[in-house]
Image 1 (tube, helix red, strand yellow):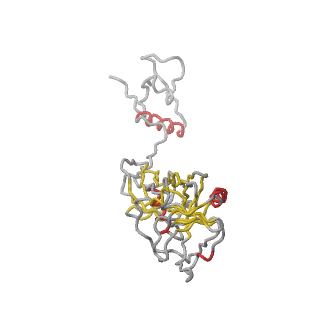
Image 2 (cartoon, rainbow, N blue to C red):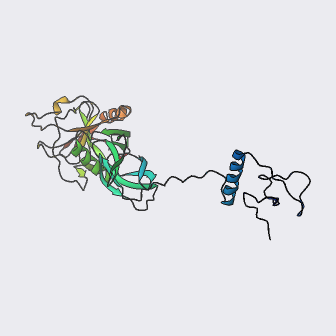
Image 3 (cartoon, rainbow, N blue to C red):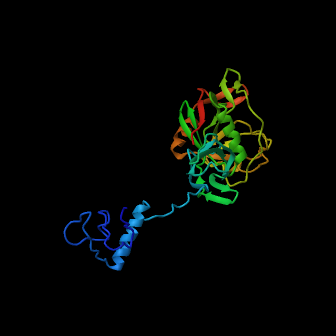
Amino acid sequence: MAPDCRYPLAPNVPCPPAWPCLFEPTGPPMTPSAPVRIRRLPLGALALATCALLLQACGGGGSSSTPDPVSTLPSVSAATADRLSYGRPSTFTVTGTNLSTAVSYAATGCDGLTLLAGGSATQQQFTCTPNQALSVGVAASTASGEIYRNTAQAVPKPQVTLTTSLGNVVIELEPAVVKVTVDNFLSYVKAGFYNGTIFHRVIRDFMVQGGGFTGQTATTLTAQTGIGATIPLEIGRGLSNLRGTIAMASTSSPNSAASEFFVNVVDNTFLDAPISSPPSPGYAVFGHVTSSNLAVIDVMKAVTTHTVGGYSNVPVTNIVLQTAAQTQ
């Protein structure tokens, strides 16, 4: 019968070699028939050794802890735009965690927000078009409330580059002040309407005008096709017809501006408000030529002009507006 080596051991029971840490034989090496004297270990050491054996038996011996639960709540760390340009769609990339859950997005100062397909739990994208506020803020929300709001990002004022036969002219526009007029001008730019037109009226100490004709014959000017509807007159909003500003041309009717524009080559503040003689409704300024490009306007105003049919002050040599493009 095998000896019972459970603690406490019966007297004179040999201790197997696996237990040397608990019970130490004294005297010569054990033999199966040799009696063994048991030396007691101190109670504290015995308790520690017993616990160690129990832990080993259970596969333990190290510390045990329960891992923290993984959060499934969505969070947003950033929302960045590929570009911010007035009147042109911008793509925003939202990064975070668990974004596949029901998260809704809002953008102030940006119209037509559309969530793009193909997003993931860590990245979503949407598009919208910055408006006249010239500042875009992004927020994200769940059913429980708002989880993210960024600091509003400034949108630069739009700029249009006119490439002409006498050099380039960059115009900065003012949509926050005269949105209707700026949007009207940009609609012609985007449609390519101004490409290939001419500056058909130049008065040295007054202004240079373009945006309505493509050339001249011996008796008349050739009108550009595709002119749209007229727009309301936006005057009295703090923008004045000073040197280098751009304004819409019109007839004596207040709301008759369409595609034609002019650049003031001197201060013409008398154009800011209606006058009776000659009858004028006032002319809406909607931007200005950047200072580095005024030299090109000064070259334009000095060209030789003549009369073509019923049109006076027509440059003898065409000043061609080759392209007009929004560049900011």
